[in-house]
Amino acid sequence: MDAVDVAGLLRTISKEGTWGWAHLRIWSQLRDFILSHETIYRRAPCFFDLTMIAHADMAALALTKLLDDHPQAMGIGYLLSVVGHQTETLAALTLGRDPLFQVTAREIAASVKKDKALLGQFRKQAEGINTMRDKVIAHVDRGHATDPEKTAKLLEASKTSREVMDSLFTAIRDLVNWYEMIVEGAKYTWEVVNWNDFGSLTPLLHAVELQEGGSGDS
Image (cartoon, rainbow, N blue to C red; front, side):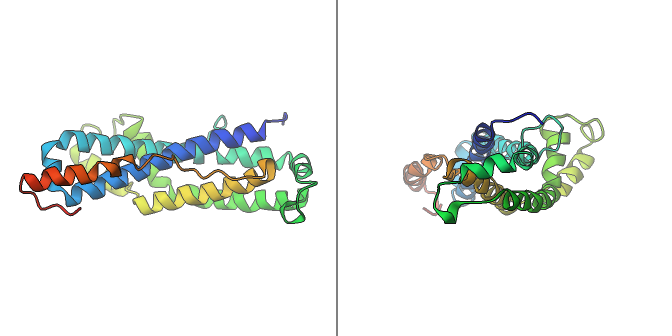
């Protein structure tokens, strides 16, 4: 394998994870908001529904990109393959650091082996998300598209909770950050600083709701 810019690869993967996780958090925030603010939701149901769908789909796509096993995919599988071929080079980057932050080529190789097994578990957990991507989000599948009953069954079978998706983003970030510490001596937070800016609007929306006689919780 030709030498690959591992630092650049880590940045690309972390960027994908950061934005995907932000989409998941915003979807979750909006969902919780409308469940407790029905009056506001009824004023703009199309906006809230389509916005939540868009955020959920983007979160799902980001996860499938990170876990993609396509030969040309730049995801976790590719990262582990690249690192596995550059253990000596990467170990050398830690020389001169505090002994606590030095690693050997053997330790890196052992981590790659462990993380490949973890990746298999992640992909197993994400099977439903992959089904959604392949048959609904990025593809109109003739096997169910014209049959509402089949579509409903497919959606139910491929449903993945936000808790599972959140745990996958967390685990993938932690995996990536171990290699980030080797290469850069620092970690990515995988957090968009202002992802929660909708929260600044909720008091205003709640005030309007109360004026209109709603009973939503703040």
